Image (tube, rainbow, N blue to C red; front, side, top):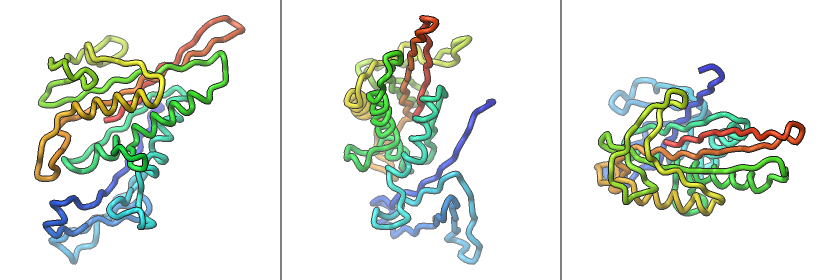
Length: 247
């Protein structure tokens, strides 16, 4: 797509309990934006090097000077998304990895402030910027939706009592959309945090060999951010409607 920009980041998490009990060995090393992978079955072979926009070393703890915290990941990726959205561009993060890789932690995190993921931090900064607006001719509105895709069924996480399978349709101009997916207006970070918590509790989870409470579904959290500006010269209103997508 013309004008589109794609950046790729990789992150290595700490060993989980299962890996620690099996005396697992870390075969990943990171230097700058380069990720090095060694083959433990072929120790004489040179490591394979791969370069990305970001290589995040989160295998250790915060005492390690090379440790990439939740805040660093947000500042590199989330802050740029927020900037582009205010400039009028649609933005999306696609989190990919096997079960237990740490996708949900990176995107959503945990309740503790220092462990918030990209989406909560982005929402907090979004409302901070909105509250700083001093222009009487500029107003903002924010709406959110949250759904999961599990076993080829689409479910509304913000309406957990609705057990039915939502249908995916395609608008001739607007493109694909989920029919009857709830879209809720929010006016503060507190509102959006409550809805995220509600949606996370409604997600399908089950034990796997990698994670006792693994998220067993694909989840899509969408923020619809609308900027409305009034032009006093022409007495006309203009709108910019932009989506954030977090998967």
